[in-house]
Image (tube, rainbow, N blue to C red):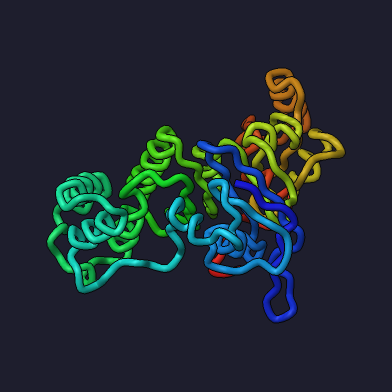
Length: 310
């Protein structure tokens, strides 16, 4: 999958402003960014649902503009809007999708049974989808994306609103289709999801690529381990900041001070001794490695939030 210099404007405002992307076949690319960064716009262009204003893109070896029908035959998309047919039962919905993917009646029925079980919908298989709860509808909608293993699978915020168990089911299915050769482009508001699934991560901001790399590579840019000290009283924060050094970051709301460290064990010993000498009784002292949340905040200045439309 390849995108070069993609541009798209809505009402004179740039949603994509020179967006580039390269995703090797058979890998997962996590597309992250704050609300309005352009993630959904990029997915819609690559899935041929939206025409670009400039640049070029190829999906499964086909140009998304000149060869749009060929692209559509190679891809599957699970977007933020449900494609569930309320009149049909859960089983009938999945069998219908199987038939649309050219499975035989028997193959479609067998695959529907497998997915109903995997996504926790077996007990409601013969209930009309209009009687499903919101979470059940989302699971059914996701199950339809895994009927077959397409060349490229677009997952736009796939697990929003799902409980941990159902998120785990989606993760397992993503790993399964990737093992079978499918390329996955995943947009998500869950940083742990990207950490769990993505071979590479592209962080978007204002329609462009702000950073990219493997999860470990991006986290390494923040300088390794951090020490965090939580105190009981806000009056103690300046004292702790003085112990941790000039690069210490103070969170007044959480009564917390943190700083990067090189030798984690030595730093913990030094800070503990220094605080004791100054009469500070810390509520908690901990060492932790950087997370994708830290990376995201450092790069964009925003916390990760769901993107309704961009």
